Image (tube, rainbow, N blue to C red; front, side, top):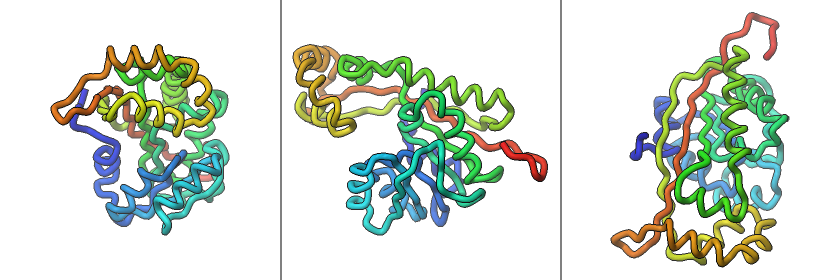
Length: 236
């Protein structure tokens, strides 16, 4: 476990430096991570299948390039980027398409660039609260199995694994509930139905910090991958 790690430091380590690098953010969501990468000198293209997410991303990063697309069918040519990153997004890809998405991400980078996959594990105090609204145990585990299968197939090789803890801070229950719905608006009805149970879990698991906010922990697993070189003319 590496508590001091975070997504940005891991990506910078994978690239050496992000400055000047062209990075594809797969499942960019609201664009906050893309914004952070651009602030560090990277050139970022984000893809997401959700139109509302793309609208928010363009507001967060007006100068950014955001494209409506799915991870399993990237609209880019081979070797278009220096690297690709999935941040909390692989487990949102349909399970039958996860391996295809990983191969697509490797294709647009080629053998020289890293493929960084950072996923939440099905454990931790934040997970224990969130699973009352939507239990992602199976889908999170499926994402890890998809990575394992793609490595076992010989298409990808794993160069580094880092497990760390993300500490999420909330002023109170309402901020947590707002966050749950913001990530997926279809959860609104379930949040209202499960509000009492979520409140109890939040009270049990949330620890109060010195600055009077509540902290919930989410263990993360980062896997740094590269596509294995293929003979000329052989595709993945």
